[in-house]
Length: 87
Image 1 (cartoon, one colour):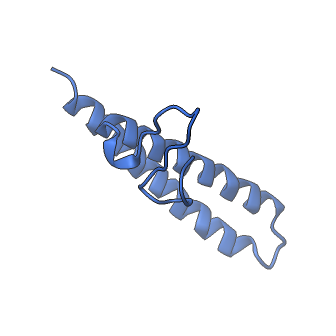
Image 2 (tube, rainbow, N blue to C red; image 1 turned 45 degrees about the horizontal axis):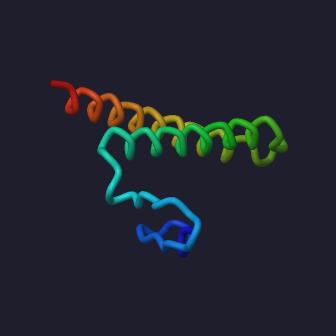
Image 3 (cartoon, rainbow, N blue to C red; image 1 turned 90 degrees about the horizontal axis):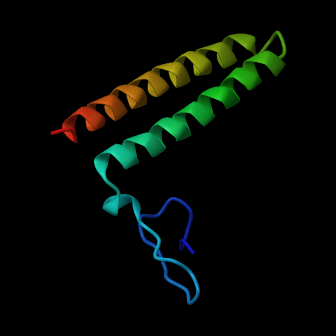
């Protein structure tokens, strides 16, 4: 069980398998988890834009654009991590 959301430490409890912390993940795996997180955030922002009222639409679109850029950066880092791990 992870001891605290977002922390890089893990606590072992009897009956549980060893939990990998973020610091022990391979660069490619770490980058993949970042892509997944950014994709989820982007999907949430799309939903917010769709459901936003006329007075909030502009702000929601700006946040969606920022989320799109962050997702693109995360994908690029994932691709670089994959190329670095190849022989």
